[in-house]
Image (tube, rainbow, N blue to C red):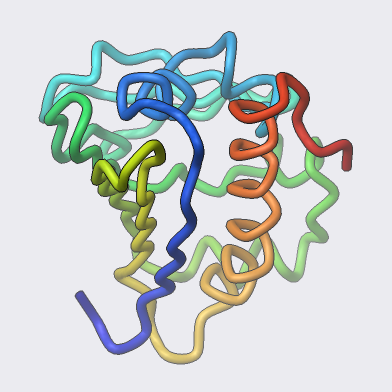
Length: 158
């Protein structure tokens, strides 16, 4: 883990298998994130991201680790003009993002009584990093919405 890593820990009142499904299955991810992943979740397998109708696939966009329901890691998506347009990222911010190396995210799920301790570590950022700044704002809301979906049946509206 680099010194510039973003780490976030939350507790979700759900079983590890439920949290795993919320991280991997489109019926969940589209509800709290607006993203559907196309992959078989096998290490080394490619990943296609569909976010708000923008499909992102590129070499290097892949599953790094998959130990259901304990650990999951993958490389972050490629920043494309289509993605930027769909999510409202300006051309100058896209240029900064595209100039950075591909980052990676890791999820660790640990039973914690009747809950799951979910630790998200997103790293591989240069210093300074536009991507790190963006994920630092995005992950807390995203994970709060995942937690809300699993605990109440409804994600947090954005």
